[in-house]
Length: 452
Image 1 (cartoon, rainbow, N blue to C red):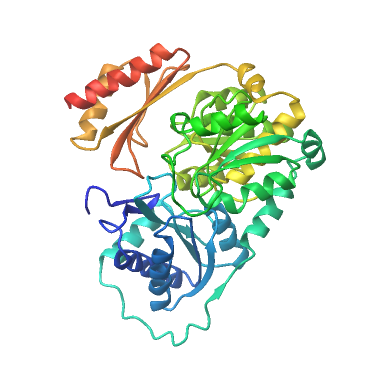
Image 2 (image 1 turned 180 degrees about the horizontal axis):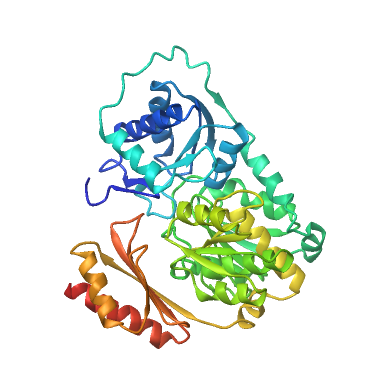
């Protein structure tokens, strides 16, 4: 494996033409097909995002699946959560989604979905990798491939599912006639987000809604990448701004003044809406802001933490019977619809909160305790376990969690250091009530990391 080919619980990611090739994609798709067949299934949903290499890799994945005897249900270019829902709708044995999510434009990837619509767990993903790296069985003769089919209704079903959520008061949302500035970064969100917002009675002021995958800015919806959306909010007088990541499973917000408020607020807003109607357990990942804990506490609900990665969070939600959950990167999971991060669901819940409270985004933010999150990256290398031990020694007064890298916590602040599952880097994330304390935590971690 090269430095930039990453095989993890998030799938298989690499730079197009360097690490990720049609041959590799076909091989991993074949391995997924074998897993599906071994579990008694045969149908596999296939989907892709808008990246320019998507059609090539989707064709390679289809060939790999059909070569081992699977019947492909080709949904074409659709959001990742739409594909997860399609797996459940068709009773398929699994799904393959060609998407590199928030990675830069030169990347692409495969994500693998189980029959339950949830991404494969580490154990099953490990079996898939062993199959892909081993000797695959002899290919079958599929003839004219008549058993494979296309599905052009997946997005319509997804929209119907969101609009049918019991959590939403559609009349109340539509009555507000929100003006929403929308940035889909030329990703697949352009296929569903404008239609959803319009169905919710919003006037959409859009930018980068084309679905050609030619990102004009770094595609991750983090504050430093949202200057264009901020300007659009101010120029249009929008009530809020929504930034969607390339495969439409994450959403970040700006307030009515164009100020990016941070991705964690998307989940915190959603948690407030859901718990107000049905209090219950909440599951988030280890890097999610304490603003979610504060929101849950208002409704007497417990928050449980899982390792970073949608599959980890979704399965922990199942185990805990969670009523809502997700990740602090703008990914909201609402079990009422499905166990997957879903930007359309997140958008609808945010509008529900604003409609019910009759507040602006900035008013909701200002009414809750504030924290500062500082995020940094470092090159992956060296002995990570030694670094974790050094961090634990340095911060001897912290509670320690080593289920995913190392997380050190002090009640109102925390530090999380872990290798990324989507990029060849180590992530250093700190949160505290004051910017100085958060920056201090991350700086100290970086110093220890560099010395280790």
